[in-house]
Length: 306
Image (cartoon, rainbow, N blue to C red; front, side):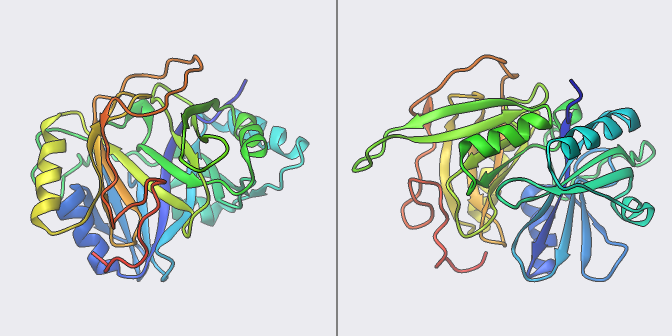
């Protein structure tokens, strides 16, 4: 079955573009490139023209996700499958594809209303090696796993969300079933994958923003430690302390970005098992920091901007 193959790019709407550019370079270690339009910047982490677009529009939230397919045949076949299933699909114009630095793009929404773009043919700048914004021990881990993963709020419920992403060829399901005091049943967290990365998308209860967190994986363990020290020295709030996830076995920590949701930097994730398992807690660590993030991973909206 034709499927999406990776999370290729995403766009963030931000209030303070200058602060975000500084944060992206000096905290995350991404390469910042001035955009082709006023109020826009591109963030690089490998040979692609960009992986993230920053648009200064005041949203401080996710604007769209770009999911890749292998080529034009798969692009056409997936468009037909979606339309046959009753999903509203708009084929992007030549100009819209050029703006995104891809060959073709289509636009749709998932059941929770999150804007999704499906594309093929990204612009790969083989003559322009990635240049990190600060010192790093090694590269980001992208390749066939894409840029990383995102956790989104799910307002449509498990069944509708699962069915939609299965149309895109993704697999997954509930990976955490967490008992919560005073609730009649545990809280389920859903994860979906489309390649060797354990998950490309994760879903939690809807919050004030579309996005809960955005994860970047590094290839050198020391870069997690370096990032942690950099975050602490900059006075940026840590939201979830270092620890190891049970599902993908990644060692990571979470911190607050200038848009008020979380960034995660991690190392050492295992590949997808392609078999269903669930957990009730992480292997160790990953405690929520009181006053910054709730046990449900919701960022305290009263925090001062970083």
